Image 1 (cartoon, rainbow, N blue to C red):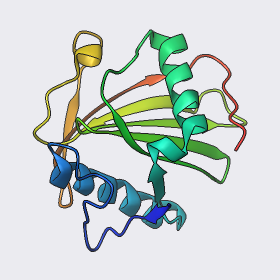
Image 2: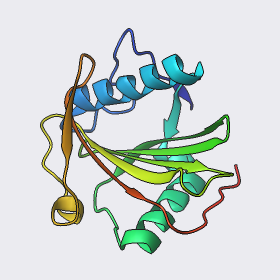
Image 3: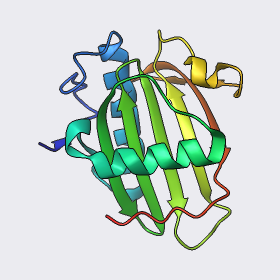
Length: 158
């Protein structure tokens, strides 16, 4: 069942099995606020078990581009398009959020981002490969993030 994320009232709906549920909910709300402010888009998530196509899309890019396969359990996904940008999100139980931004008409605007909820360790799959910058968020506390540029072609059919 889809859930539209409310960034004014942070909720752990769908994330309660995470050991960092409150911070992951804050990070999810942080992303929702960004999309509302920048694109007037309402950020909606669905349970991962209902979105195998999105999971497969993100997993394929991670594996083919950097050989990354996460052991963590995916809890939710989101997939949408705003302007010429296609986005796919996966929120994991350990507090990791992975997002794919894919400009359909500009290969220079394609990347995978990683955001770590406050209180979680850097996943072993990322620890040796990426440096993380920090930012403060009223909704999520301290967010650590990193990214890489996508080199291949990965058009997602919705």
